[in-house]
Image: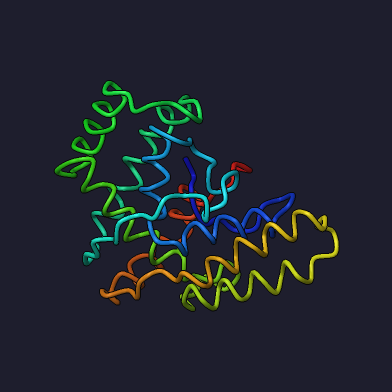
Length: 206
């Protein structure tokens, strides 16, 4: 379930990050991918399914994050991983699985699974604007433009993969995520950046 934005993958690094960055830039990020694990897709959809094919997600309800929420989201996600990882890609929503995830969310201090999803939405909205090299917040547009430049300069990437990655990135660039309303979230995510990337990064090379 490491959905979103992870540092460059070992193989096809730019392609992996390009597609995962597209997913983040389209807004719903981590929570949407988790919901897809109970419906369209599990754990790796950020790499496997281009974001433009996903349905338009509702706007993120932006909140001011806390250190406790970030820690709780990480803890809950680690418990949810073994459950969601076993779900087939086209699995229909399973009430039993939903109940399990709801229970894990509550066990880790969330009022509901929806609240957990909203927290990871807000985390991912911030993560989408971090430069994975400097680990500093530069904004999603700058990140996408840097990825486009990397893809264009990559001589090892096949023409087909390059074309698909550039199409995804350019589509994301045309549909930027909303501006971050709570600027304090940037500093909070920065403090836990490595842990968040490890858990929500988007590749399975760990």
